[in-house]
Length: 115
Image (cartoon, rainbow, N blue to C red):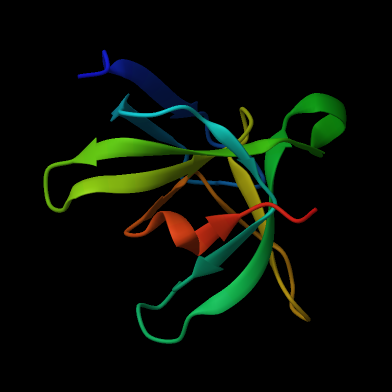
């Protein structure tokens, strides 16, 4: 069995994520880059969003987003999508961008990389 490592998601309150967050996850795989996610913001309709990490550099700028398998007490294994020190920036295709501190997805196929 692979040795688990912790991933800390610590986001201070900022313009992208006003609420901030402080979470720790146990990774059970290797992180990979992602550029899009299938997101259900209201729990009903799934929307396709471009995703990047969001950094405090320059008052807010893109950086890589990553996905990794993590242990989830409610469903066994989930996929954590995380980004920069200001969280993630999601842009629905044809919509306005918004911030999230991180995403916890039920299925690894809900996040991917173009190219």
